[in-house]
Image (tube, rainbow, N blue to C red):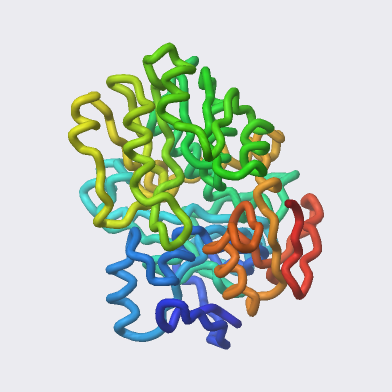
Length: 386
């Protein structure tokens, strides 16, 4: 099969490698569609975020099979003890608990200190074939096509963030940032009984999507976000802030200034959910957070950290299948064939330069039948929406 290997930061190569084989309790999947996450694209470029240090250590030992946890495919084989029908359309939860530590034995799977993470601690779906633990496999329901199925993991993460914030019915919410995670957070908050829903967006196109997805008020780039939020809430501030725009400025993100904005826009005793991935040396307004009695929530990355079972993914699928959440609006670039993966990574990391709203997708050969017909990819990137 062909698979992508990272030889160094900025050096991703697609190579011919042996086909993987599923072991006991594992499933072999033929990848139908995969998209690099923004975090993966930043890490592959060498940005000092998330698991950067661990990736440096791994690269010191040679090329690494890295990335590829946002994908869908079809069952192509199964290891001993697994009953899986060939051709079944599926995706997989990215995090698999070890099942052997004290936390796992006590039923607290989300506390597992050494989970297996697809694309990070084990080879992911930047390949024609991928092996995953059978326990992580999630069947894709009727009416969800390959493009939406590959984009479900970020939606599951948005559901995770909403649950971590414990948004009560009618509570006011500010979403900072209108990228993929911000726009998904808007859709989940609107469906999750939030009250006043405010979004801070930089581009007119994303502002329009935020309005379409249910935001009551959209603040554009020129607005003093915190001041406008206080005006809209009689000087009190919002109950919850979902922060999605922070991160490395070299990647076009907002640094850590969004945390100060969140603190100033928040009601005393409110909650900030940090969805963005800040560099380790990010400066935070700790005195201001303490003075205002802020609860700062930084959920473990990925939906699997919230629920290693398939439940959150299954709920994400339900929202898509019912039409409650629109994922297609966020997919603007699709490529054909694994050789286009480096280009998809470049588009994902530099979305603004390429006019992309979300991660670029790569369509491979593992296509199922009986689903909504996938849009046909081309040899060049197909711009699906602007």
